[in-house]
Length: 84
Image (tube, rainbow, N blue to C red; front, side, top):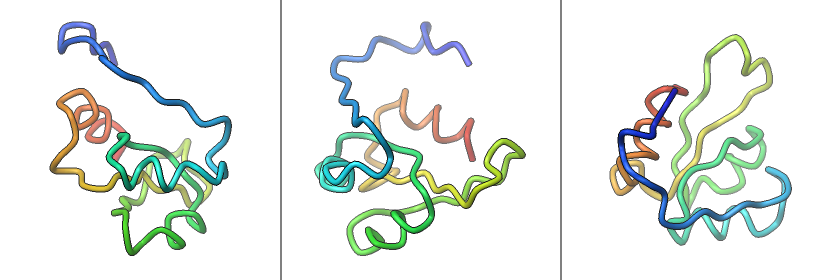
């Protein structure tokens, strides 16, 4: 998906792995979205919302997580819509 026409990203944060201990805290602070294992999504269920990914490439139980999907930037909302 080409999001070049939507706008530019003003800030990007990367974690080395979906299991990185700082990832749930960053998402809870509104850092955006992440694809994480189901176990990580369950552990963070009190502070994050999870959407199950059902495409064939998501053969593991992966979840897309964010503090609030309604509060995401347009770019992140488009990415979430394309993934779910």
